[in-house]
Amino acid sequence: MKKRILNYKPTAPGQPAQSRKRDERGTAMSILLLFARHRSLSSAQIASLLRIPTSTVYRHLQTLLQAGFVVESTAVGRYSAGPEVVRLADNYRQESLAQGTIRNRLEKLSRDTGELAAFLVQSGDEALCVESVESQHILSCSYAAGRSRPLLNGASARTILAFLPEDEAAEALAGRFLTRDEHAGLEADLSSIREHGYATSSGALAPGVWGVSAPVFSDTGILAGVVTTMVPQERADDGPSRERFTSLTCAAASELSDTAVRG
Image (cartoon, rainbow, N blue to C red; front, side, top):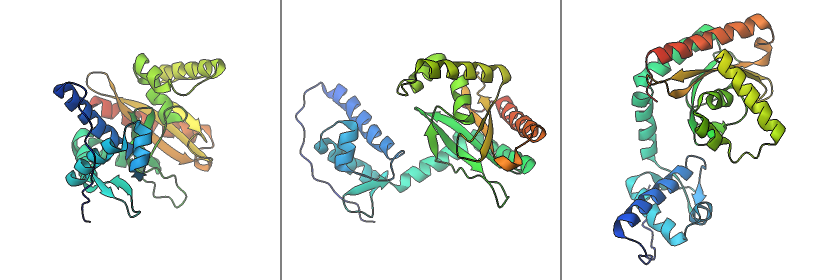
């Protein structure tokens, strides 16, 4: 794909050069991060989302286009994540995800349960799936790496919230506008999750899906992520089945914590 060179009007300097450089780097990063949550965007949409001038967007898009982090979408005037992002994701899986340890343990968990196994982490105010192994059943759950959901409901989200530092959990919930009763119910649920060491949910991700999640900690005791098993409701409709899924999921999370997964 041919790289597009964008024209822009320079903005007048209004701050010290060193400070401007820091702001420039932050703006470029903010633009790039938008493509983690949007498949494609126009320059006007980027400007609106970040509340910055369109001329600033053009300037940073040119740099991102040339570096391969952004490409022009098939729709004229729109942009999407570029091929270099794929390399970053692959390096993340190979190195940051304990050099394949997480993938290997998820594969074992999926074989033991016969169901989908996933590893999710906090990403701002969302729970982001960074690795998953699909079930071999014809009727199965699906949750691919790269998918995310609000950090509020569901076993994965609640487990992350329960074991985050208190200030980080509060920040992640700041924009949820919970009522007093909702907040009290959430706090009671998080306390129960911390006590038991895992969370379960039914229908929170999608109707007919039951899930269980357990925390994984780094060697410094910081939450690194959560291991989650997702099961069609009909295969988790009794106590013994749920106990088995819970036990296997907690064992996988505990084993990954013992290997000192890097957060």
